[in-house]
Amino acid sequence: MGMSEVLRSIKSAEEAAEKRLAEAHEEASKIVSDARRKSSETVQNAADETVTMTQKILDSAREEAQKEADQVKAAGAKEVANIEKSSTSNQDSAVEIVVNALASE
Image (cartoon, rainbow, N blue to C red; front, side, top):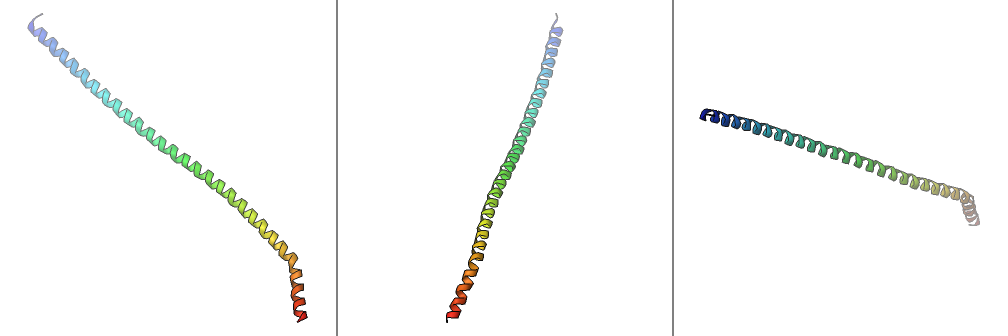
C-alpha cells in the first residue's frame, strides 16, 4: 500500500467520521426537540387536569352549599308557618283582650 493510498484511506475515514458525527448531532437535536415537545405536552396536560379537578371541586362545593341553603330555607319556612299558625290562634284572644280593655274603660 502506497503513501497516497494511506492518505486516501485516512481522508476517507475522516469523512466517514465527520458524517457520523453530523448524524449524531442531528439525532441528538431531534431527541432534545422531542423531549421538549413531550415535556410541554405533559405540562399542558397537567394544567388541563388541574383545571378540570378544580372545576369539579367548585361544582361539588356549590352543590353542597345549595343543599345547606335549601335546608336553612326549609327550616325558616317551617318556623314562619309555625309563627303564622300561632299568631292566628292567638289573634282571637288578643282581640277579646283589647275589646274587654276598651269596654272596661
